[in-house]
Image (cartoon, rainbow, N blue to C red; front, side, top):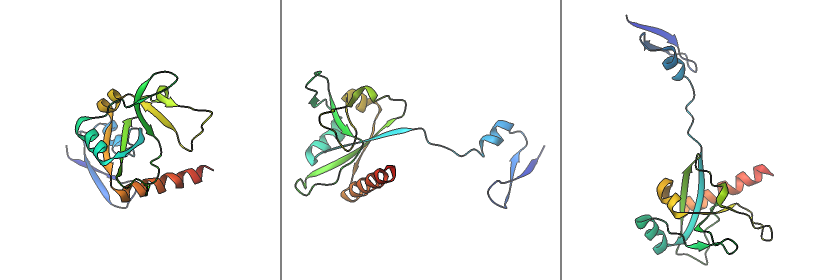
Length: 154
């Protein structure tokens, strides 16, 4: 048993595959790979606060007035760096798509916001989140990308 050539789908080159591969393996190798869904959130704070989070993890630092529920305040928009707070830094937080954050969403009809906000328990973030600190230029790029996406929705 040798290799059998098959035509590559997107170019004129020919590829060979072992004849012992199953049809599933052959077909699967041509299926575009998609990343699992993720949810991205942002958290800003002073450099000391951010370094503490990166070292020790998140803590439930906000309490919702009406329910007493505690968590970490995050938004789906990074906002822009504020010159009034030059010491602020931004964390980008990603959670796997299977983590349902809808129960932690903050909805304040009397105080609508341009972006969505959540109060997510620190235990959930510490257990499931991937966190990275953005440089100022990355923060500005994330804010520009968010604003562009919002313009396209209009």
